[in-house]
Length: 255
Image (cartoon, rainbow, N blue to C red; front, side):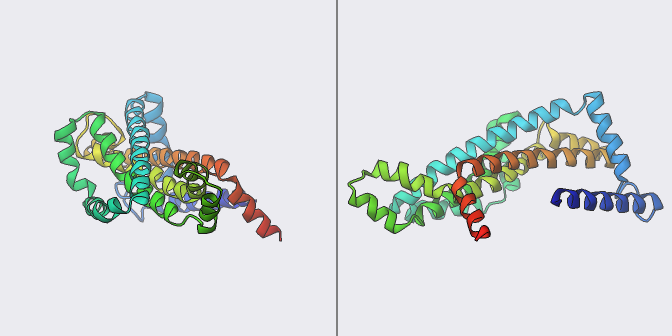
């Protein structure tokens, strides 16, 4: 029923948009009609023009996401488990994160070139901080009673980390992963906007230069779908791994 409501709402909004565009209230170069965008989207796929760009951006997004998540988890554990690192290193990490990535993207192009590596690094940096904060927050909020029980039974630090801290942290970590999944697309796109020979960001720049507004909207739709798919995959994996949280919610609702 909920899906039907969303579908009806989408159709109504698209019809309203189509009517406003066809009535001439808004110039076509500002807001093209959905039908024009759909036709341009079909042309891009049927001609094959978009495939190399979609492949390059997808590789950059997935690689950057994997690299950023791995680094965020590793440093998050270090910062959470070692107070000295949190005290001295974390402020510098925060300071670096506050620098807009669009401002330092040209430096990464100089260091890593105009190929895919610079886009991967930028995407990884954008993904890094949400995972880092999620891991730190999750490890700091581990239940003290459970920790005391593990200590009482003589569990080693590794056993406590593997059997308690990681599993207790998973709900918060996956919340950070869902945010990073969306940010990965943004990071890769920033790198392609600054300098690239291929990619959806490069394609948007080329279409915009030719004042092909329906084409720009069509590529934006592809980017939205790419980010939505990655977010849905992460969310699905999270729900399967963190199944006990969902069960608790169902129990509470049922009661």
